[in-house]
Length: 282
Image (cartoon, rainbow, N blue to C red; front, side, top):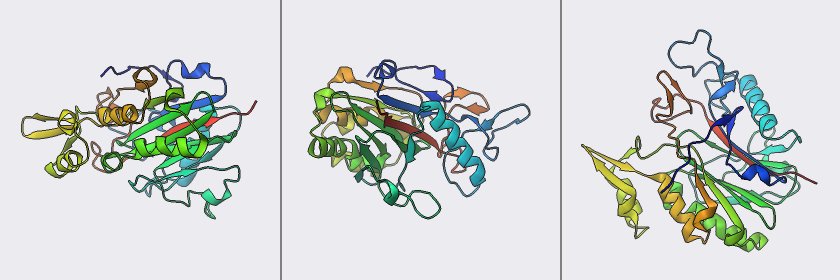
């Protein structure tokens, strides 16, 4: 599997070639460029704040709101409305209509539970949050339909990406050969040690499961990038249309300053990245 090592442009990582689609906006956030300070690592003197986009209990909601504003402005100057969901490690994806009011509670936060979003409505920016799990973005070049999926190991076993592609086909008439997909920054096989129960869950679901695991020392390590790439291929996407960013949320960066948030490597006390994709109007 070939992976990409991409430069950061502003606050986000973007896929080469996708920016050529003038109707499309997308990006995978890093932890840099925000105003949050609670999750700073090591020496903080002179460091900029973190771009935490999650409504975590430790962070100030005003900081999170500003971080989200900065991120969405970086991805699009068109004033797209951000839509998110309460992620629960399921295989459920929701269609986002023109009226998005039902996706928000009284505080303006996500009201609905799911782990995938899709839309063809211009002016909507879909947001998927992660801090080790795999974000997968999909764009139908012909029909201008977009989707984002949150694929942790449970969602991957449940087939959220493959099922999501099938839902795009049923809902919009999208064809896999017209789709591009990107597997975003997330924990890599270099850092993702798992237990036997995870291997058993994959083994009961995929005939290629053994190829996703590697035993090293006393540990067993899972390649979620490849697992989700395989689902995209199984859904019918051409291999050439699938990009894997290939940066590990657990170890990418410099000593004392990770490039991404990592729930596992920061012992659960961490922020959240956000992966964005949306359609702009003419």
